[in-house]
Length: 217
Image (cartoon, rainbow, N blue to C red; front, side, top):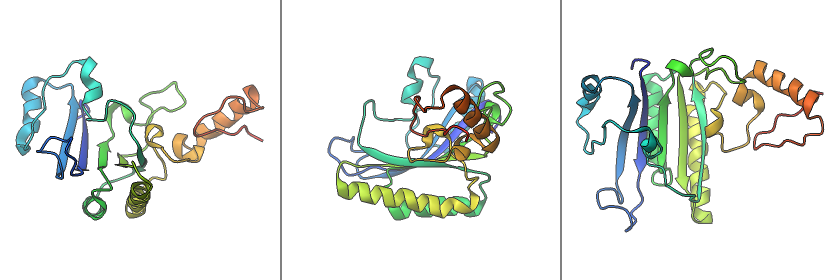
């Protein structure tokens, strides 16, 4: 895809719930998502797969939050992410196999293509100037009960083990729902800078975060 296109591939396993529409309840889908700055004619070329459901259309900025079909409010769920340096055919096969093996506990397993302004150096000036990876992975499931929590946790663990050969060892911060070392979130060089800043301005560790940066010793 050109830099004007951000694409996502997902496998969704919907549980058989009566509150879901009949065309979703108990079914699995491969979902291709894209956000692009192409002309309407160029964007129409992305429809070549002739999907069962086609929601690809010009979308105002105010509706961007709906594109990924996330629940509008808080829900009990567990998930975690990782970054991949490459995506050979073997990795795609593993991705599909682990999703099939752990559905429907694994409600969503997704691959996000990283390029354009996400490349390292493209966002110079901040602590994070890009993402040094080719793809971001995120796996998640609903956890309304303890039994469901165990199943989803096992499924997310399986995703990490299965895709480990292609992992960069890093994780996109917004997908890090489990504790991660700072190096995995920011890279070694940036993490060292952050620890020095922490030591200079917050040695008592007053400012806390889900993924804390310890002050340099």
